[in-house]
Amino acid sequence: MPREKNDLLIHYDEDKQKFIFYSVNSSDTASLRRDAFDGVCPEVEYFKSLPPDEAEKTLGGMAFSLLDLGAIKKVNIRDYPAESAIAHSEYVAELEEQARANDADAQFHLFIELHSQAMRMRSLEALLRAESLLNAAASQGHAEAAKSLVDWPMLKAAAERHIDRGPTAA
Image (cartoon, rainbow, N blue to C red; front, side, top):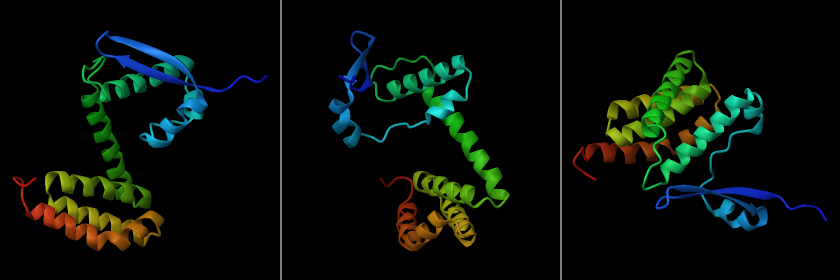
């Protein structure tokens, strides 16, 4: 009889300060995988491309940061929010550089970042720059940008109303 595939479930018991690893039949996790957050999905090939120690360290770091993300009592192996902020800043800087070189995909992803920033910071300047990048990406034939451009007037109007309400409005 063939052995059934199992998934790994990691539970962080915050009260006992323990990690509990469960090997669970994959068919028993199907609804959880279907209904939950899509998850972080790095390709196996990515880990295979790393030296074994680095692959294990990278996967462990991902696990700790995700465990802390959902925890009330943080594990605090590292300051994951600060590291995430640094990584995000580096990502945006890379997008900026690529967008300046007329990379349509970078322009589109920077559009997404700036639209989000415009909403968070209530910044008309960021919104207008986002629009410019969306137009640039779409004009180069970027399919997602062209699709987003269809809904842009409605999204822009909503963002402008949000920005106009000012920083004290919720």
